[in-house]
Length: 308
Image 1 (cartoon, rainbow, N blue to C red):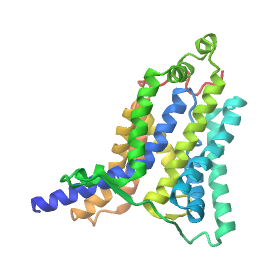
Image 2 (image 1 turned 30 degrees about the vertical axis):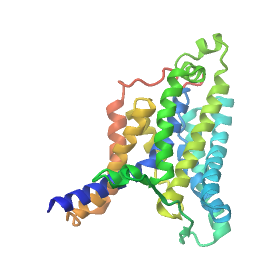
Image 3 (image 1 turned 180 degrees about the vertical axis):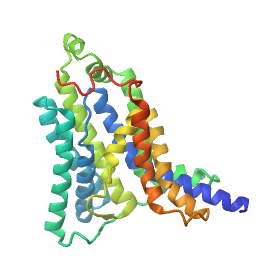
């Protein structure tokens, strides 16, 4: 294999990694905020699929930009339902999130079939084009990967940086962290933990909705039932691997994006004989390994998942 071929394959792999990591990063960054407030949102998967369907429908009516907005709102609507029970009524977060995910998967499937008919038909949508950065996009190997991507990829990078600064250097960020670590002390300091948690969950839902819209409008170009494919659960593992730090979360998303892209890489290297199901399973195997390896020795927020 020549040097040129190696560079081409490597560049394609990196481009696929970044593209695949984008929706994971968006969902995980939202979940990072939610968990720093002490709420683990298992219902993230539901917000992703809701955002995918909402973005699909809106993009066909008002265009791609409106599709992203609608996706965020749809994801936030599912998160609001979760917040009502898990934050407002102090229901168990794991049970509530699981129920919300099942509800959202069923609801989107029902709405899709009711409006568009045959569930086996993929619904095509307008898609967002790539934004190439002049000059930088021509850099060998990394140019196409990092500087010729859809706008949501750059937005995800920006959000990671802004969130990292916001959590550490603003009063609101301090209130978020205090709520997730020491809710009683937060109350004594005049912070309303439930309000902070509700807002954090809504933000996580909007980000997950954006992730779902990105899947359709910046990647697949079609909506199919269940296309979230466990990404909400993968996003939770990404937060753990990123140690609840936005920049760490963004880096961890790239690792999972690489796992998703290995199938294309190995096929390009002539390993087409390896069962493709093995590569499809890699992100989920990695999720299990991350959660198992992190058990008992992570820097999780002290009040994460607690109802009182």
